[in-house]
Length: 194
Ligand SMILES: O=P(O)(O)OP(=O)(O)OP(=O)(O)OC[C@H]1O[C@@H](n2cnc3c(O)ncnc32)[C@H](O)[C@@H]1O
Ligand SMILES: [Mg+2]
Image (spheres, rainbow, N blue to C red):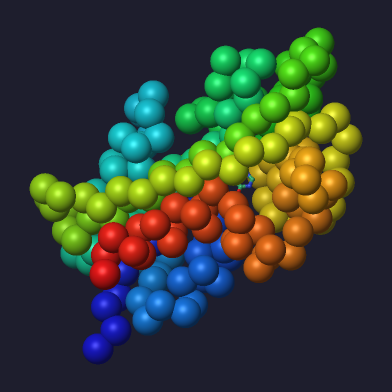
């Protein structure tokens, strides 16, 4: 029987990437919305603590193993901001357009546009699992002032891959998953679960 796992995220962009990444490995991964799990609080200053709290929350409410993703874009000239606060960088309600506008404005006076995406994944077998499985991934790039591309989500139209001459939003879903912070983290996590 395929093991059912709850995916502790409400982000449609992430869910789409996970659906394609997990399609191949024989896990039956269901978004937490299917179980009416409400969004968890993310009060911590580290990605791993937020991912752990999201995974535990979903596992507790469903009785299923849970996988959570906490991620963000870290900009070197801004001391790592927006970082763990990426989803709400421009305040509430969450808005990709407002976040991107703030990021471009904050970076305008800086010559160094280097940045990286970071993703940490946490898998818990149950809410009180004393040995959560943790894996992460880093994807370097640069922030550009003008958006390019229609794919991806979040900061992707402003996240340039200099070697490819494209933003993350100009990659196909498969191309992004092959190299992204999330793709790297998930492949590492799956390796640890085997
Ligand atoms: O907590 P969940 O429900 O998973 O959804 P969320 O959008 O709140 O997710 P996070 O708390 O992990 O915040 C991560 C933010 O970082 C940004 N981000 C993360 N990965 C990204 C990617 O692959 N492409 C573009 N932006 C990304 C995006 O703005 C996300 O909202
Ligand atoms: Mg969140």
